[in-house]
Amino acid sequence: MQPAAPPLSDAERARGRRLAVASNVPGMTFWTAFMDQLPTLALVSLGASETLVGVQSGMRLGFQALQLPSLRFVSWFSKRSILVAGQLFALAASLPLVFFAALAALEPGTGRALVMSSLALTAIGLNFADLVWFPLLRGFIDPERIARFFGVIRSSWHIAVILFFVGGRLWLAGHPGAFGPLFAVAWIAGVLRVALLLRLPERSERTGERIRAREALALVRSDRRLRRYLLGICWGGGLRVSVLPFTLVMLRRTLGFADSDVVLTTIAQFSGGLLSLYFWGALVDRVGPYVVFRFTAIATAALYVGLAQLHSSGSSTLLAAVGFFFLHSVLGAGYGVSDTRVLFELAPPEAPARMLVVGGALTGLALGIAPMIAGALLDPLLARAADPLAVYHGFFWVAAGLQAVSFLPLRIFQRA
Image (cartoon, rainbow, N blue to C red):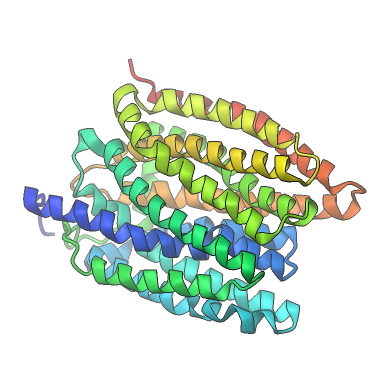
């Protein structure tokens, strides 16, 4: 077995940080366009059920579980080559969505099946790439500035995504249901990401010792702090990813807003992250993650109560929905930076892949299943309900109660 590779030089680490920020701008534009709210709206336009929307919303995170058996590739190949290969696979898988108009012209069941197949394969490629993204970043970041770095890197790509959706709203206002050109722009951004990734430096983890999934899973049994992290993040995060897609469905299908109106909520969502991420990064490094976990959980629960007060369409309801997505994103930015800080602190710098992958894969699996369960529960309730809006309101009240106490398992990360 070879000894662990030495740390990167200061110049290499600085170059790695610059390229990480630069590549994440087109990379997250691609990710968001093919994995987030745009596919949800596209599927709703094809008549997708709540169950299908739940599957689409959850599969990007759910397929993260595939990273565990893929850990062995870190023993055999450079992290950079794994990252590029996954992105190339995602590009090939997502290409059919560029021709969305042709898919929409097919028989509805066939069109939905082809769209879901393309999205599923794209999710698999992105998750294979993400297997090594955090381990790569771990080699670039100073331990005492983890949260600040993620505040910067996430702020930068939020700007690009906001511009993308501002253009998307203008396009959909004049071309309702024409999602293909938006997917095409995002696909080109994915190609640009590959060009930037090829220049990334890395601290190798190829020591001649195979990295096995069961060794990574053994960390869960041996590390109490990791178990509490997983419980808290799966609890709170699962609620967050379950509420958002069905808020969109309620606005679009039950309250009757147009696609271009609903895209305003997406712009608000990324604006909230952009305006708050750097602040959250500095705050988490200063006061520790637990204080932020507790505050964001309780405040998010209050937002869900507010969702249950939306009763009719109109400009005031749309304004309230835009405000909800903005504030939800502000709170989610703090939650996410705290989450990343804790996970990076748990991972050893010389070989972070096991800890980072097991943490990401298990939380991804739980967060992927959560909206699928929510969709499967909502479908029969909505089918029998005389008032579908009452079903959504009940869902939001339950989510609020569970979210308000989701920070409790994370008390172990309090600072003395």
